[in-house]
Image (cartoon, rainbow, N blue to C red; front, side, top):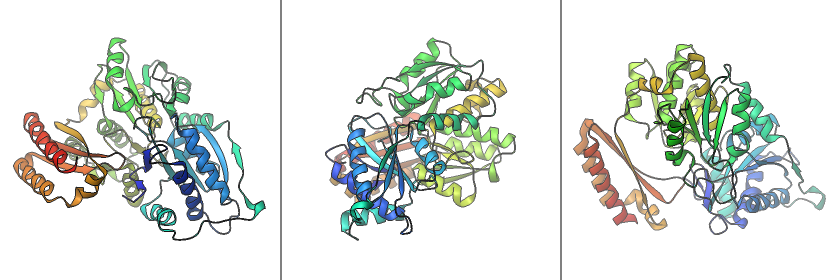
Length: 449
């Protein structure tokens, strides 16, 4: 992780950590790093989710970009993958999404996409950081007639909806599903998209007010959707996060179907149709051990990366794979998208169910999930800085790993997007891993809290 950019952009509490000054300078530095000297007025797209601070940060980014000669096209409230798609469609030099994804409304973030719709690699983010933090080069100051301009794109959401719908080969006619929009970006797009595909939809949490994004809803709070699907006897439910780059599902019995299950289901279907490139699937170190067993049993290779969909994508591009993602619901269908796309994922999952006339509860049995315990421990900024060097933590981690042996595993990692350390254990015995996870979490809290 860099000094400003984590695993998914620059994030912080809006107006105190992620200030207007910082946002303005990110805009200025990004324009300098991402455009060639031959382009007099590079074009940047800006999208945002529904957070109250989005307008403020959008204004700061506009000021920074225009001050160094970049032109800006405003997309309004759209999902993150819409920015990634439209930056390439419009031939723009880069795209920026203002969002803190699944975090509470007081947080916000800035994600940057290249002209090809990919999240920036570490080396480019480091160049942007060096300009902002180290004064590596002075900000560009164009002549008075060289300032950038601003244009509003009214059709952005509809163009994205039409594109996602065009990737689905079997419609959703006859399906009745629930959509939890997390009071975020998908509130603008989900109902129209899934209705266009032929489904009857029940809308939940699609009335954003600037402060209710992700509040007891969306892909990080599945309980309401699970109960709703079961109560109304629906075929499935889909939940998105604040910027709609994640999707988790609920089956016809009201049971959770997480990202690992979704990837397994879709990969198996792709393999059966001869569409799975190199018979491989990409996940992360957080992917459930049961997924590895599923791949072994179905003649697929499982490839693991560091946590973060950007690292999953890098491996997919490097080795020519076409599906990968995370347990959290970031799923990348590289045949159709350059980043995780919650609504595209949900649409393809529902399309497959309708094509096969199958119940999600039945198909999900193809993978057996190992018991897993995940505890998020809040830590201080000083604690986060000490995380990798604390010897007590290291010794405790080694001791617990030895206790589990080949019956399970422990993974302790600092979040790239929040002031947290995540303690994850998997194993054969839920009681054992639960006790060991809480033991480790207590040590983390004592050392770094």
